[in-house]
Amino acid sequence: MGKNRETDETGLNAGERMKRYWSHNWQLWLMLLPGIIYIFVFCYVPMYGVQLAFRDYSFTSGITGGKWEGFKYFRQYFDSPMFIPTLRNTFIIALTSIVVGFPAPIILAMIINQIRNTKWKKIVQTTVYIPYFISVVVLVSMINILFANDSGVVGNFLKAIHLVGQNVNILGKESAFVPLYVLTGVWQSMGWNSIIFIAALSSVDTQLYDACKIDGANRWQTMWNIDFPAILPTIMILLILNMGNILNVGFDKVFPMQNSLNLGASQVISTYVYTVGIKSSQFSFGAAVGLFNTAINFVFLLLTNYLSKNATGTGLM
Image (cartoon, rainbow, N blue to C red):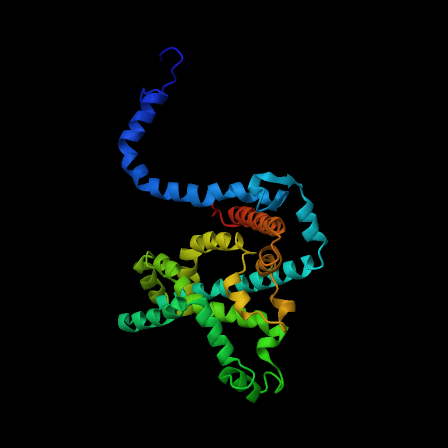
């Protein structure tokens, strides 16, 4: 061993190991370079603007020229009468979406995987994928047409079977907003989100299914004992990622569905930031609320990852 030079079991020092590594993997890093540049430019560089949440921003002074206010705008949001309603509505919509929407593609993927007729299987897959390609604006327009108070087909059907009252305006009812938002979202994204689970199920050894048949297992037992354990690591990873975005309730769908009648249930953090931070030109306040939202998401991401690693041994880090 040379002086001041540490070597490994191959007899190479750190510099030689690094040179050898780059000589074998430079093509991989070259392929990764565009992605690294993209993430740096569009994800990390804009984080420079986070200081808006701590400054009194104005157009004339620029991002760094405003007076440093510390946590003033955070306290302003916490003391606002809209703090509890917006946080509550966001949590309700997000948690309901996860509880209802997350298991749906898993169940769909396991059902599709049990279809043995290849042609019929492709037809079913194509049919459930199509709604994903409908834009959010078109989807909200469909909701408004189908659930219109006087002429809505679905709305009138629900009234005919007495699930809702005759004089009830479904689109304006606060208690109907969350079910409408969540169920239409599940219908739209369930098929597309099932793709990754179907891909995971395709790697299951077919001999396991043959063994189940020999043992007399029915399809429910096959799904529970073969399919579900096979995709459990994928489920946990996606659950962690979903929990990391728990407060990122889509503005693009909530805002078009929002009206003066359902505002008590539809005013979420993102729409509140738009209303107060953007329309009222309170950019520092809007940045503070957005940063608070991100911090909560990050805490949920770490918490879910910790629980997942302890429960199943699967995690992001």
